[in-house]
Structures are given as C-alpha cells and as structure tokens.
Length: 280
Image (cartoon, rainbow, N blue to C red; front, top):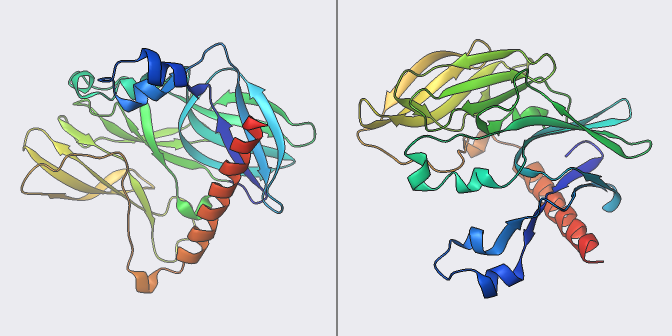
C-alpha cells in the first residue's frame, strides 16, 4: 500500500471446484484440493485508489505466485511494489514436513513490479544480483511502509543447518548477512527501531530459531545496521517455529493501533472490491 494506492497481486492460483469436490481425494490436504496453479492463465495486478476505493487498473503479467509483499511506494509517477514472486505454487508444497527434513529449497524472485501511473504499464525487475534465491519470510522497518525505503530482511535457506538472515539494500542490491552458526536455524526477523531513531536501519532485529546442537530454541538480538549479534537467549526446550513472528510493545507506549486498524480495514475493503471485479 502506498500513499494513494493499494496494490493487490491477483496470481494464477485459482479455486478449482471440479478438482476440489469431484476429482480430488478426500485425504488430500485442503490447500491441494481447493487451489490449482493455472500456468496458462495470466496473472493480474490490481491498483485501487484509496480516496474512493475505485479499481483504477487491472494489469496483466506473466503467470506468477506471490507469498509475501515487502513494501510499496510512489515516486515520480511510478508505483514500486516489491514482493516475493514464484513461477508456480511449489513453495507451499515444499513446506510439507517430509520435504523439510532435507531443508527447504525456495526458488524466490525478490521482485519489484514497476507500474507507470500515466498509462498503467507494468514491468518486473529483480532486486538481487543472483536470481533466483532461496529466501522467504520478509520484513521491513514498519515505519517505512508505503514510503520509499532501502532495506529488507529475509530468511535465507530456511530450515537448513546453515540458515542465515539477509539484509538487502533494494536500491543497490548490496547484501549483509547474519550467521547464527552451524545448526542454528533462524526464523522470521522482526525490526524494532531504536527509540528516537531517524535512520531506517537504526534498530534491532529480534528473531527466534531452533538450535540443533543444544536441542533448544534460541532468541537472538541483532544490530540491524551492522548485522552483528548483540545478545542471545536460550529456552529450556524446543519451541516449534510457526509461520510468522510478531512483536507487541508496551501498549502504554504504542500509539499506532488506531492507524493499524484503519490500514487493515482499507486492505480488506480493497480486496473485496478486487474480488468483485473478477466476478463481473
């Protein structure tokens, strides 16, 4: 979401009623039963104007699947929408337990969709020098949501014994890594700004993970500017990783809840509008 627009990627993953209720096996997972990636269908990217919630553009793009969005902003008549893009839906199937024993192998394009608001043309760019990469679970400094930004934080080689955390400069493609050590598998990092910070990467990354050598869960604090560890804590036992992490500050010092609620309401409404557009 930018200052003026909400960007919704409509991927080529479709709800297939025939497969779901006629041809699939009742024992198949719900995701596999209900959804099918249709490589023969173009994906669409919808742009919704926030002031009146009107769909102002629905642009076709090559078939893609999107798991997470990094950020989006406007600059010089262009919309930059950054997200994690795949050529198909295999990323979800590769998260099955039996497949994760050998480590995940995401084939990720950390991509930027560049949208020209004068003619609603769309192009796709790579934000990394190497493509594709094994990266997932992206985060940014929340204070820069909808604004021009530089830094993204992602898990590289998730659930591998040599997993690391990547700090990516989306302007220059420069990379920094935090390595927790062999056999330590970190999960989604959360950026916490330093009180009074004026620089985008002035803060800490908080992340949890599994320490295989110690058979425990660890929590690490990492300086986001230098990507060096400042502290590490261990739980007395293993706590399984989930999908996403969240940080909840002291409510008495948090004045963002109202804005966050309004943002969520806008996203939900825009999504409903885009869905109705598909049905018309």
